[in-house]
Length: 413
Ligand code: NAP
Ligand code: HSE
Image 1 (cartoon, rainbow, N blue to C red):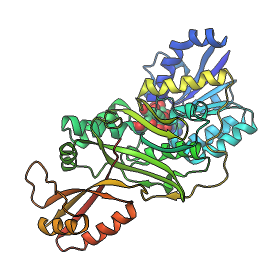
Image 2: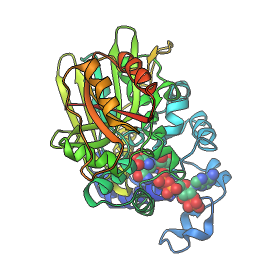
Image 3: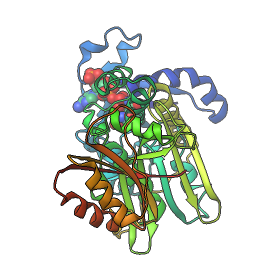
Image 4: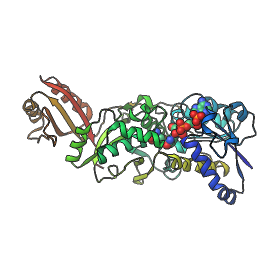
């Protein structure tokens, strides 16, 4: 008999209860083990009295602490006390499965070592891209590759918001409200909309892939809060969608890592990823491009990843830590590749701006918004790398009457 305790009965925790109950027979057939949910921890017990399994719910961690438990599923969220609970249970030689990227991005390496020392598993497949199996394929099936780069949509909430704004002209605030109601968003949705959640997931992917420690707060991180209807109109005009991309690439001088809004071709692989879906396009030196696609947030998709980890624990399949490497990666925050950039300029005198851009880039065509909005003009500029672009834009900013410049990378995939 395998006793499972679940910390949290929110979107993910309740999904794990539902899916575990549904899969009980399946688990028995495949592993020969009976799985029993022994206890479920919550913060406010009054919120849960309608649950059929209310008798299993407690708000007292010491009850679980002292139980005969085999697997602890952490689905509470946040850094603390989640980190202390995960560490404490590993030290008690309990297997731990978590969906918590905040904890894994910051402490995954340390916690994996604690798990190793105590001969148990720490598993976290649900922490990156929800229901998409990505960590296991990266570490197993793609192990023979040197991973060169990732182009990924890793946050369901922001992708949902951008899809609603793009496809239904929905206001940002309304779309965020719906994402929160459905349960895609983090308890503090700033994590989603400011890009931190994507950065944490990208750091986990990068640490695994490049065998050096990547810290999420060293990455360039820009969220979606500055995207407005004008950006969307421009994107449509040039056949693009707008996505919050998590980008990383192995360069000679280090690892490029950034989370930033990007224009992507409307009909490309990433442009077609809508709503709460995630997409991860990676490139390995042997396999070439591989694309992973599926639901990146939500109750059952995330629970699906947790149940997969439960199977693995029962079948005693270990997964290596976030990164065995002791060295910290050198992080580069400026895009190094030759690319097109979409540059939007708000200014008093459009002609002056056009003359400046033409002097630098030749006979380039200015793009205007569909609706006549005075003082806004845009260009697509091809530059060797982002450092060169920044120097040009600094000079442009110096022209009198230029109020605001926005640059958005165009990823042609
Ligand atoms: P949630 O809906 O807010 O649920 C959190 C649950 O944990 C609630 O039941 C809450 O209790 C309980 N909890 C929180 N702090 C606690 C504490 N200090 N002591 C005891 N119980 C506590 O969150 P969620 O969306 O399920 O997310 C959980 C984790 O999964 C997060 O790390 C999140 O990033 C990750 N994740 C979420 C998704 C998703 O789609 N939602 C997808 C992948 C990963 P009360 O109910 O009593 O407040
Ligand atoms: N808030 C996260 C998202 C949950 O929207 O992607 C899944 O990690």
